[in-house]
Image (cartoon, rainbow, N blue to C red; front, side):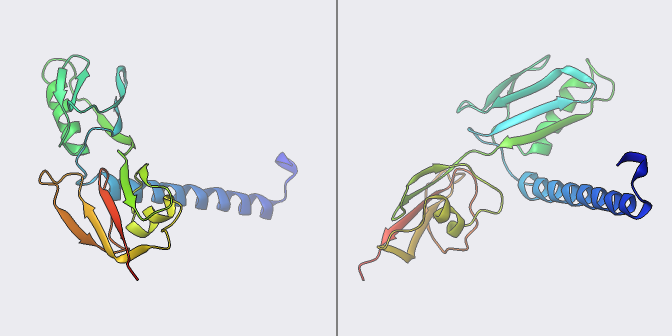
Length: 188
């Protein structure tokens, strides 16, 4: 192949590579826009913090129940409840005056905390969250709904709800990390 590949084959190959790159970039951008915009970090999330050109300031960690991480030069930072951009801003603010002139900080979510589904599903338990997850998709992850499952008696407790209030939900209800879904039994 190499230099002996015909011109049309090289053009098609280049077009394919270009289209693949554009599609991949759009997919990553859409996923990060959907997942990271107003999403608040919580215990169980795995994050990576990197500062461009500063390898010593790269940190990968899973957030614990304490909500605190120990970051180089800045010490303990309370991160639970912050958004990704909020954490980036906090680190920039901490590094800028004393350590770096213009820090370029990037925070990414490597793994979201799990959601939980119980009741009338084949395999109740905790499962890794994925952006765009609905109760219907969660049921599929749990090996499907049982024969006794009531599609009219599905309840959700939001992971970020301090009052732990049960809300009625439908199959197309979007889930968030930490949510608890209960599928109750149908009597008929």
